[in-house]
Length: 432
Ligand code: SF4
Ligand code: SF4
Image (cartoon, rainbow, N blue to C red):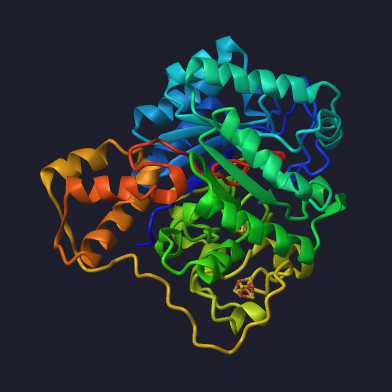
C-alpha cells in the first residue's frame, strides 16, 4: 500500500476578498458560495477518508480565502476531532479577534499569513487592494494576542528579493513561528506575473539556506524550491535538514506525500499542477491516492532532462509543476534550476526505514507531545542521533541534547511549528 500523505491541502473556496496578481486559482470576489463548492458534509467525509489513511496527516484549510466560508470552524473541528493537525492558510484580513478565538476553539493549531512586502504600497499592489497590508497586520496582531501560532509566508520575485533580510527580521520580531519563502510557479493569474529569474532564484535561495541554518529563534524554509535541499547539502552536509525527509526538509512531495483537493473536489498532486487525479465526488480520496496513474508516475520518479542525470535527483528531484506548466511534461527538468549536473554519483536518499531503534518510556512520552506533523521529522532525527551515538534506544537525554543543538534551526522538538505549502489563491501555506 502507498504511504499516507504527510499533507493534504483543501482549497475550500475560490471566493476571495483580494485579487492577487499571482493567484493560481484565479480566485476573486464573489458574493455567494459557488454551488459547485464541496458542502460541509462532503468536506467532512473527505477528512474522514484522509484520517483513515493516517492520523499523522496535516490538513491545510485554505482557498481562495477560507475565512469566507462560514462553516470553516465546523470543518476544522471535525478534522481536529479525528486527531489530525489542522492549519489554516489565509491572507489574514479577516482574522478578527472573534474569528481567531473561534479557530482556536475549533482546534486549529496555527495559521499561515501571506505578507508579500514590508512596503504597504507594494504589498497592496501585489494583492490588488489598498489598505490590505494594514488589515493583514491587524490579523497578525489578533493571532499574537490570542496565542494562536502563526507563520509568515513571503513570495519572492525579482522585485521583492531584496526584502529577504528585512522579512526575516520582521517575522522574528512579530513572533512568527516560521518564515516560509515561496517561489512562484507560473500558473493561474500568476502566469502573467514577472517571475524570478534563474540567477535571482539561485542567489536568493543561497542566501535563504544560510539564513535557515544560522538564524536563531525562528524556522526559515524555502517552499516549492526543492534545490533548497541541494544547497543545504553543499553548505553543510552535517546539517540535520540534509538527512531529513518530508516537506519540512525542503524536497517536493507532490503526489508522493502531498496532494491538494480543489473547491469542487478534484484531487491534484499539488496546487500548482492542474492535473486531475480524480474527483472525490466519484471515488474516495484514499482510492484516488492509492491508484491514480498521475500519482503512480510521480512515485516512479523517472525524471527527464537535467534532473534525470543529476546527482541530486534523489534528494532534490526538482519541482514537477514548473516543467508541466512550461512543456506539459511533469517529469521533465525543473526549468527554474540553473544547476548543471556534474556526472558525479547520485547522492542516495536517506532510507525512511532505517534500522529499528527503540524508545524509552520517558522519550516516548515526550515524543507524543510533539504535534503530529512534526513528530515524524523529530522521530527520524532522534533515531539517527541515537544511532550516531551507538545506542539502540532513544532516551529523554537524546531529545534534550537535540533541543540544545537548536534542532531544526531554532525550533525545539517540543515546540509546535508549522510547515508551509502553496495551497491557496496566492496564500502559501502549510504547509507547510
Ligand atoms: S511540484 Fe508542486 S509541491 Fe512540488 S515543488 Fe513544485 S509547486 Fe511545490
Ligand atoms: S537539475 Fe533537477 S535534480 Fe538537479 S538540482 Fe536542479 S532541480 Fe534538482
